[in-house]
Amino acid sequence: MAIEICCKAATGAPDVLGDCPFCQRVLLTLEEKKLTYTTHLINLESKPEWFLEVNPDGKVPLIKFDDKWISDSDVIVGLIEEKFPEPSLSPPPELASVGSKIFPKFVTFLKSKDANDGTEQALLDELKSLEEHLKNNGPYVNGEKITAVDLSLAPKLYHLEVTLAHFKKWTVPESLTHVHNYTKSLFARESFEKTKAAKEYMIAGWAPKVNP
Image (cartoon, rainbow, N blue to C red):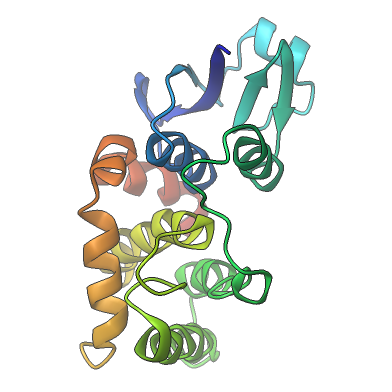
């Protein structure tokens, strides 16, 4: 089956992979499953006509299976798992939402202009909760075996690390050793190296949202 995927192109560099964490999540899933696929880079500032025809709401990631285009990273990842069950990336249902609040809390803190509005603490609370989970169940969310939960978190933690260091001079506290080891081991995976956006494109992608 030929798999085609549409991903965000880098801001200012339409032929380079951009910084969408949801696109990277799907790419990571395809890589971890060792699937062959074709990537279309979509310049979100100037979306191609064919892309809008198959996908009127214009969002990425978008994947093509059996001549049908499907959007939404949750749906896409579920479908890949269904069609290509080996190796399994399905987490136990009770672990499916581990770390799921980190990304929204990170975005709120990143955009915040008030140091005392509690957004930093809200992010820290989520990171501490991930730390506790990994301490008791690690190295990955479901022990030794990587699952879809890790592949969803990895790009988001990468965005958090790169952009908070750049825009806020902020880093994850050293005391969260399990979180640090977790991100190191995720970022070192071949699938991650192959699918990550370059740091300068991440910063360029976030700049308009941080300083509108």
